[in-house]
Image (cartoon, rainbow over all chains, first blue to last red; front, top):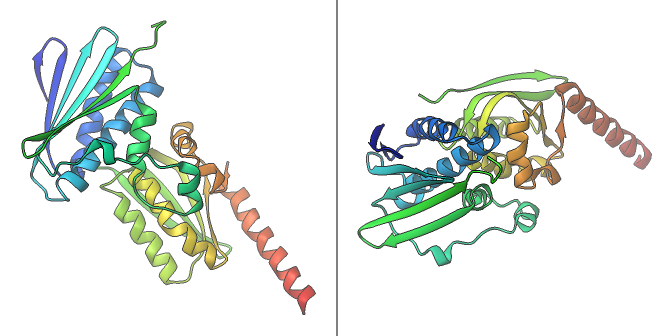
Length: 146
Length: 128
């Protein structure tokens, strides 16, 4: 882990699921220090885990050793996690958020990560530059009364 | 190093799987293997004890979705017990409590399996 400026923290991992633990520990520390309660810390950890898992499985198609850059940008009450990769690009418009009732009735498998990320965070933004890099930005705000 | 462990035992003909540590995309294949082996050995009555599970991500949840249909087709079930509030919240967020029976402890889940077995026996006798 390296600190690039007062409110930014960076972590680079390579694309392997054994590195997810490192990501979770890194995010846990950053979110706790920012002032989130345990429940929100757990939500952010999970959303970032899901985003990195999707990159490893889909953008890099399980090829190991490729870079994933994670930056935490903590500013006032806004906590952003920016995750970048150089893998296969996708169109954010084509992402389907599953209807959970239908999902469970049909015993479907996979695709839950997107649903979780959307429900655990306040904002999700994608910046896809085909052939250059993919970026997903996950944002959570500290509660107003904090 | 990801910390995950599966401890398996059998009580009253029911397979009990205890999960310990972190269940994520890295460790989910281990649980998948465990379910596959049980199904191969025609063990369809399964209890998963979550008491010592600290974390679950969608990769872990996916394992339960992958096997529930086959297990139920064979008159079995996957019943879940001893979830911490943190792990239950994830199941709840996805609506999984509609699909899975979740109990406070193993004994209640075993009792339900045994009761279901008795009901089935008495129905068979009536037909005879």
